[in-house]
Length: 168
Image (cartoon, rainbow, N blue to C red; front, side, top):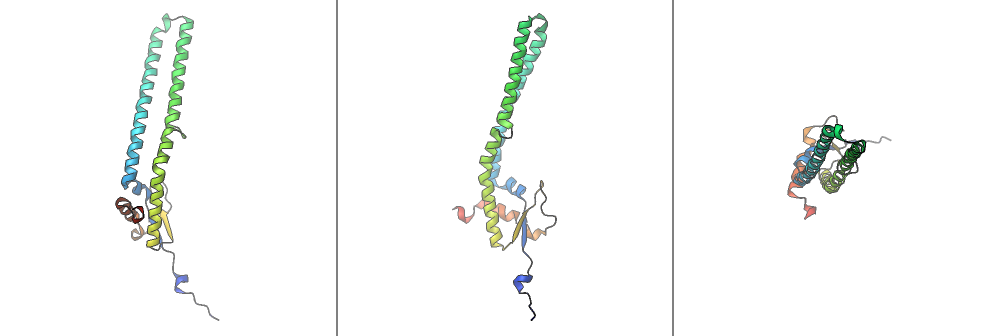
């Protein structure tokens, strides 16, 4: 008995791709979140620069007066300099470290945006009857070849900008 494959069995999977980096650059909600993060980072960086300038000034002042100070005064000023260096290091870690305020703010602001992007990608994948959607961006090249007609990046951006019907 000869078994011929059905049309569904011979059909290749339909694949699409998006550029998530481009989506996040062009999506207004992501742009707004990134502006907030940039402002936070700039503010904290300014404070860090102020603290470093203070340390530099105190160190220069110490060097100028070092010859006139007693050993006890020298020790006290060196301890003050070390304490200020430690405060600067601690501040840098609190604000810019892996578990710092900027990382926490980035996660809290961008996570819901990324979830919304994924939801829209899933909706478009179902509408376009795609079996697979790959992310093709500048940092991670998951897809080695893809025809432009399967690039749904702009469709995702358009949908996000106008708001998908499920958001209303």
